[in-house]
Image: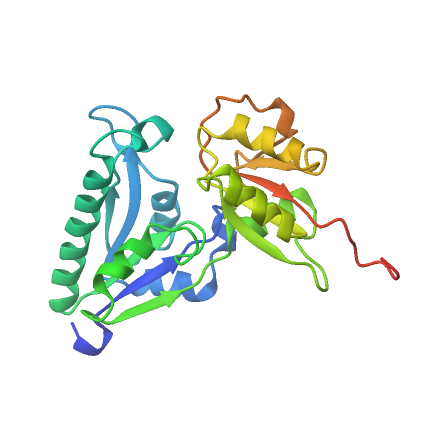
Length: 252
């Protein structure tokens, strides 16, 4: 393998619809030596499940070796357990060592994630460990936030609107302060926090504007009123949108 092409590439697959994979991402996957993607086991001993892997397999070249990196079990209850952070750090340390070894052998290694690699993605943790040690390239992807806005048919922001993506893992005070400062926002990382978020949105007078979507752009996309989502739900690939009040009509 030519040493000049040896590198780690953090690659965004987009929100889940294979047709939203960029041309550059498709070309890069077709030429990669090793294609890595995160996944999780659906149960003890079962084959790893990965929506990212389903997309990667469509674009992999004949020479590409595809491999799923099985992420530690997630969920609100698991993440709160003792030792979870150590387990996650060990996962990223091991993955980083594997990637560095393959790049140093002259391989082009792609780590492909849904959405964009620098927006609440698992790739950020690998980047933090490997930046400066091996060559790294970033290929952006369509964000789930923009895909969700398209599916919901709501503009995220307009003219001087202030917009942000907010992690629901923030405490109430920080979330409330951010909501007060913004005209529009999207809430990520909702698992186990639906009831709390609904209460906070109602207190801020935003309950009627809030919109809920799961698996934006995917074949099993779900859009339902937020008040129909159970307070104890622990959904993955889900978001709450509070879009701008304004529109593009003259005088608005």
